[in-house]
Length: 438
Ligand SMILES: NC(=O)c1ccc[n+]([C@@H]2O[C@H](COP(=O)([O-])OP(=O)(O)OC[C@H]3O[C@@H](n4cnc5c(N)ncnc54)[C@H](O)[C@@H]3O)[C@@H](O)[C@H]2O)c1
Image 1 (spheres, rainbow, N blue to C red):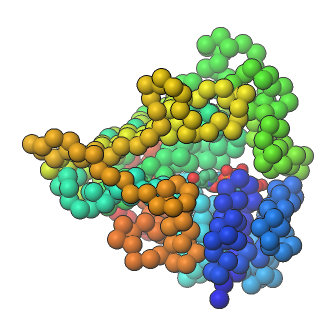
Image 2: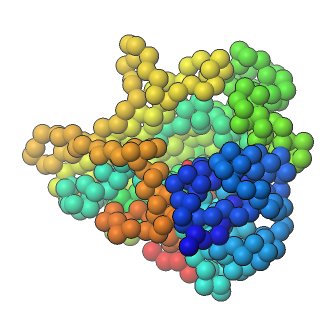
Image 3: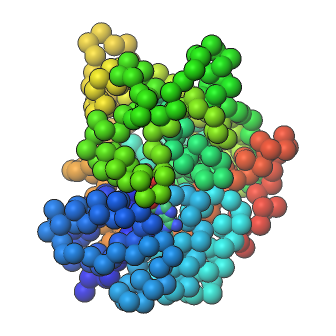
């Protein structure tokens, strides 16, 4: 029999879960309620539910978590609210008697992890964190290669992630731009990446040092580069010729979800990336020591002209290298806001693609085939939603993530934030992350 679900936080991310419930898993998941403080975004998602053939659903405000669980006999809630709300929303839902599926990051600070772990222990309910990057075939292939012992024992990982001037810039337009809301990109974004490392090398972070800052976006950097007076927002003051500005009215979803809904709560989705008030970093470097003795050197840049990542894993028997170009260039962004990420420009020296290379000591390099399945993200989405709604399969790659994985993934970012503030390395056990240990 299908379990009774609600979605808490009906913004952009909620859409994919709602589609998956109606289209792929109607037998296992019945959506019975929506919760959000913003009536505009609730109405948007009711329209989506109707389009998918679903009924009129009861709607609840942000303070109605317990009432919703009780009135609608909810079994499980998908939490897709902003990161800073996760600790309170998840722990209240657990105590109200529901299981929880929560989007990454689990929470943004040590206090939040303690709140969630305490509520789990008291309620006996479960928390699953969705780490969709694990399910991407290329990331699974690297995990398989390491688990098969192809490079021997892992000694170190070099990991470079670049976010481009379209996707990367977007974190500087909305709630993510304030550290109190998102924990900065070392928590909000890099929790994906640190989760991958934890999972790839099957170990836990133990000690972390970080350095970084806001060197590109923000009012001070704009003034230092002589950018002059900037418009406050894309939609209101935007000029079509300014590639940094986002006009929400150019896209139906953005217009309904944000532009037409800002009248209810004043949430502005399109602030200028050079406007004051940004408290997160855009260039970050992290060194982490792992419990198994491996070392990670990681960097994240949020104003790159292309988007993707390079990861190299060194082992006692050789080295594995994964290189991914997700978007080779950002061009014509303002003119074509739906710029497809697979667009290739003739003559480009960089093109979208992925390559996994294995080189053993004393041998030439070989390219490792990346198996691809049907559906979104090379079949990864289908597997993720099956694990989520049907239950984890007997997966040799252990892709389904539990609350421990969620804590381990934010642990590096939380420690890195402390290191940024103090200039000192941070031992993860000193953070007291709710009884969780390496
Ligand atoms: N795994 C991924 O690749 C991925 C991608 C995008 C977003 N996310 C995660 O999904 C979550 C939501 O991100 P988004 O981009 O949809 O944000 P969003 O701003 O589009 O939507 C957030 C929604 O939560 C609502 N909200 C605010 N406070 C709330 C509260 N106390 N209780 C319930 N709802 C509340 C807002 O009104 C809004 O509708 C974030 O945690 C983000 O990290 C994950």
